Image 1 (cartoon, rainbow, N blue to C red):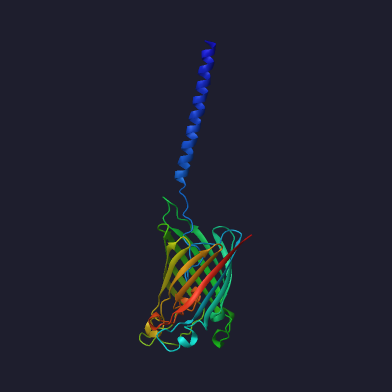
Image 2 (image 1 turned 135 degrees about the vertical axis):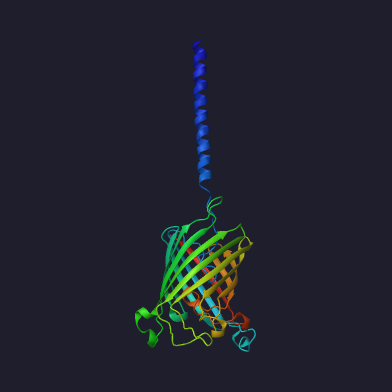
Length: 300
């Protein structure tokens, strides 16, 4: 009887431990189901061509980027062949540095040839797409730029300033397709309002709203087709007044620590402060420019 009681006690204890282990496993599975996996690498870089992406620079990482725009290719005109289809000219050059304060917050500054713009900027990713959960990612981008260009009408420091506020909403539909929409607000402290639109009589605006669209379509493991487009809402900016919407297409190549873009765009401007209000080249007239973006990441 004594031996029987001991055996029953051991079996009972084993059964309790087994139940505890089973409950722990069920709790772990429940927690895993309650915390859907984050969708990673919606885009490969912090910028596509003109458009910002949902990505931020990782914590304690410095990202150095160079963007170059050659001159108009002018394939329909007579100057293209004399400038090697724009390769002998430089419409714009920009270099920038971005540093990740956290995995979701990065800050940076850059310098552009166009308008000699010096800008400081920040991006905060506040929403993350999750498998079986949140269907989108979202980030807020802001910049402030100053133009040191010597002009009598913009001598005062305040008149040289412009600002951008942008909401970035992205979705990685599958392993091959990522899409974005970018509601954007541009404010320039000074604009020349003495020039009237030839037809509707409108003048240039300090505030411009625009809507951007961007997409990445994966071709191979390390190559993708990329495109972005911005539509400003402005009576002053139309083809009749020699303003056009910025459209860019290109190929993205990932090579280890580099992300390289070869692109064609009608925009000389690289930052939103320039390409949204000041794109004056027309795709239909062959006024598009070959360019490239390249970035390198340094971890600390």
